[in-house]
Image 1 (cartoon, rainbow over the protein chains, first blue to last red):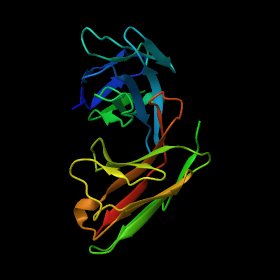
Image 2 (cartoon, rainbow over the protein chains, first blue to last red; image 1 turned 30 degrees about the vertical axis):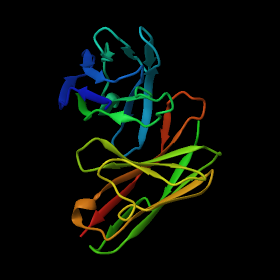
Image 3 (cartoon, rainbow over the protein chains, first blue to last red; image 1 turned 180 degrees about the horizontal axis):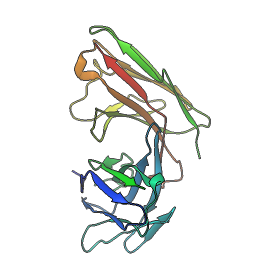
Image 4 (tube, each protein chain N blue to C red; image 1 turned 120 degrees about the vertical axis):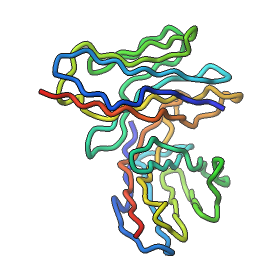
Length: 116
Length: 115
C-alpha cells in the first residue's frame, strides 16, 4: 500500500538556520503530496501541497518540490524563526489503484525546535 | 475552507466505558474521515464515513470498537467503546475539500485519556 517515510528528528536549530526535512513515498499511482504542520497546542493544518511531478508547493517561506524520479517531497526553509517550532508531517493521497482513494497516509512526523 | 468543530475537546474516562465524539462541519461535505493520533505518534486513519453508506474501516479497526454515524452531510460521530488505557489518544475528524483535490481540513481534535 501507499506509505510515507519521513526524517523523524527531533531537529533543533538556531534562528535563521536552513531547515530540510526529508520525505520519500511509495505509491502505485500518481499521488498528491502534502506537508501538514501542527503547532504546539493547535490542530493540524495544511502547510503546502503539490499535485503532480515537478510541481513546487510553497507557503510561509517553506518550499517542497514533487520529484517523481526520486519519489521525494523534501521540505525546506531558508531561514527559520522561533515561530516555526512545530511538528511537521509529510502525507500523500490519491496514489492508490483507484483514483478516488482520498484517504491520507502520513509520515511519522518531525519535531522541529527553533532556538532564539 | 471548511470550519470543523469537535466535542468534547478533551475527556478523562474510566476503562470499560464508552465515549462518543462529535464532529460538526460548517458546510456540506461528502467525505469525512476519523483519525487517531497516539501519544508522540503520527496520524492513523480509523475509517472513512460517507453520508448514506456504511463507514469503511481500515485494517486493525472494527465497527464494534469504533462505531461511526453519519446522519447528514455536516455531522458525524465516532464512539470509542469499552475503553482501555491503550485507547488514550487524540481523535481527529477531517473532511475532503470537495474539489477532488485530495486536500483535507482537520478538526481541532479530542484528547482522550483512559484511566
